[in-house]
Amino acid sequence: MDKRKIEEAFVKVCMICATGIIITSLVFIIVIIIIKGFPAMNLAMITQLPKGGFYLGKEGGILNAIIGSLMVAGGATSLAVLISLPIVLYININQKKNSVLTLITRFSFDVLWGVPSIVYGAFGFTIMLFFGLKASLSGGIIAIALLELPIMSRAVDEVVRMVPCDLLEASYSLGATKLETSYKIILRQTFSGIVTAILIAFGRGIGDAAAVIFTAGFSDYIPEHLSQPVATLPLAIFFQLGTPFPEVQERAYASAFILTLIILIISIISRCIAAKISKHSIK
Image 1 (cartoon, rainbow, N blue to C red):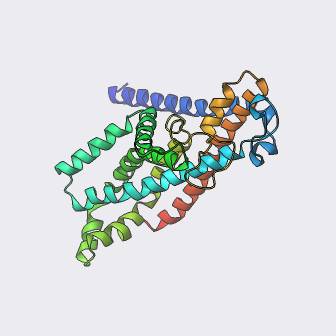
Image 2 (image 1 turned 90 degrees about the vertical axis):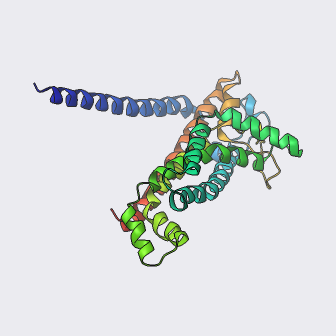
Image 3 (image 1 turned 30 degrees about the vertical axis):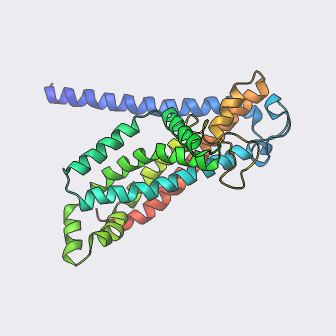
C-alpha cells in the first residue's frame, strides 16, 4: 500500500478516535449529573430561593444562583464585547498585519488567555480593597469580564482575519471610511463567527467559580443593585458538594445539570440566529 494512503488512514483513525472521545466524554458527564441529580430535580429547585436550613437538607431552591449567574455572565460578556470588538477592529483595519502594536496586542491576549481564573479573582479583589469596595455583583462582572476579554478577543480576531482583502478594497473603492467598513461590512460578514466567540466566552464565564469567589461573594437573595453580593451556580455547586448531607449533594448535581442546560439553550438559540444572518455573508 502507498505510504501516503497509510498516513491518511492513520490520521483518519486518529480523528475518529478523538471525535469519539469528545462525544463520549460529553455524554458521560451529562449522564452522571442526571443520574446523581435526578432525585433532587423538582420545580422548587428553579422557582424558589434557599430557605432556612437549605444547606442542611431542608426546603428551598437555587433561583438566586440561576439569576445571579445570568446577571454576572451576561453583564461580563456585554462588557467584554464592548471592549474587545473595537480593539480587534482597530488592529485589523487601522494597523498593518505585522505592525509592532498588532503583534504586542495579540501576544498580550495569548498570555492573558493562559492566566488562571483565580489570578483574575485575586486581582479584582485587590482592586476592590484599594477602592474600599465589598464583594458585589459589580465586582463579579468586572472579574469575569477580565477573564472573558482575551478569550473573546483572540477568537474574534481569528474570524476577522479571514475576511477577504478584496471585500475590504471594494468597500474602500466605493468611498467607505475605515469606520464604515468595520461596522457595516466586517461585522456583518463575520457575525456568525463573532456569535461563536461570544458563546465561548459566555460559557467560560458562567461556569467559573474561582474568579467570583472573592469578588461576587454569595447571597441567598437576588441582588437589587450592583453593590449587593450575588450567588452563582458554580459557587452553589461548590458549597452544596462540600456538605456531608446526601440530599444537599444531590442538589449540587441537579444544579450542575441546570447550568449545563442553560449553556445548551443559549448555544442553540444563538446558533439559530447566526445561521439566519450568515446567509447574507459573502462566501
